[in-house]
Structure formats: C-alpha cells, structure tokens
Length: 124
Image 1 (tube, rainbow, N blue to C red):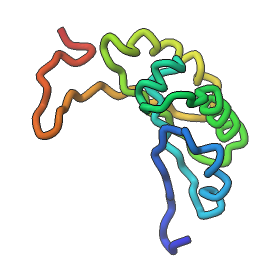
Image 2 (image 1 turned 135 degrees about the vertical axis):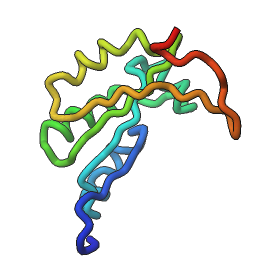
Image 3 (image 1 turned 90 degrees about the vertical axis):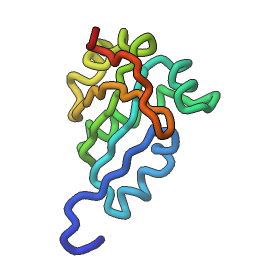
C-alpha cells in the first residue's frame, strides 16, 4: 500500500471478478466500478463478445461484496436506445436495497476519431 493513497479502484465487466477479488482485496483494493449494461444474459454475451459468460455470477458478486461491505461498489450502466433502455427500471429494482451506487450513463456515440451524429437517448 502506498502512503497517502486513500482509494484503489478497478473498473471491470466482472467476468473474472470472482476469481480475482480475494487477491485484489489483499492488495488494497477498496472500490469497484462494475460495468453492467444489461441484466439479460444474451445481451451481456454480445457486449463482452464472449459466449458462455455466467451473468448470474456477476449478480452474486454484486450482492456478496455489497452485503459484506468489503468494498465501495458502483455499477455503471450505459443506456442505449433500442438495446437496453427498457431495462432501466429492472436495474433500479435489482439494486434498490443493495449497498451500492448505480450510475446510468448516456450513450456517447463515437467511432474512432469521429463522433457519430445519432440522436442520444432522451433527446428528440
């Protein structure tokens, strides 16, 4: 641990978190940002580009880590029109009683060096 350092955080999609969490915690990790854009297993596999990922293990990690208050937890959810905007209330319901923060982030269309001029969610 480095003197004067108050927070050691990681941002992850959670795929390897159950395996790595004990060592990360031992190394001083005290905050996790979990990127979770969907609660639907097929959509999650599409986003992370890996078949066979177990979304339920992510939910278990969220619940266990939060309930044990081992770490500060934050869930980041990028809301995308036509993909997951119908899940916002599901996220609220899933996390409302857990000791964590959920941040809904507006999709920022960007393709390489150039902005994609699509209409973001919430605008007409």
